Image 1: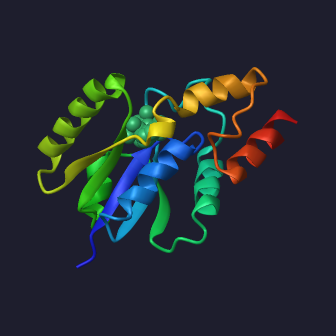
Image 2: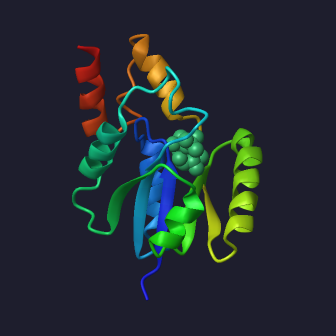
Image 3: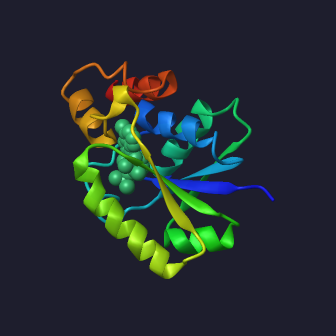
Length: 163
Ligand code: ADP
């Protein structure tokens, strides 16, 4: 049986930090579904730059040569998505200490909702521990270069937004 994990997040936009987690996750799972999930704390806020459809298209573009990656959208509970889509695990990335508390609460809550699906954490790659979509958006909006931190397709999309 295929081991299919989901990697949920806002991905506004996908960064090299996310790509690193996905690439390494593919060593542990047969397939990964990257799920652009609406985050009630972030989604409707002014800080969102790309629409959900744009985010999905960017992730699909980044992984166009990787048949083991699928991209989807979820507006509900992650655990409902997992149950309905044959998902065996949730993949999450951990950066510095700041991520831990929130991730710990979310993983515990999710396990309460569905004990069959566990959360797997991967520690961020050395080069990306300080990268978040929000900080990149901030730097970019003030005219800074983020070329090192995002895949080329994302950089192009960011530049289109600027012009
Ligand atoms: P959220 O919307 O939950 O804050 P994001 O969309 O930013 O999450 O990211 C989804 C997942 O990717 C989360 O588990 C987050 O911790 C992880 N992640 C984000 N940026 C990085 C990075 N630079 N290195 C490793 N993991 C990351």
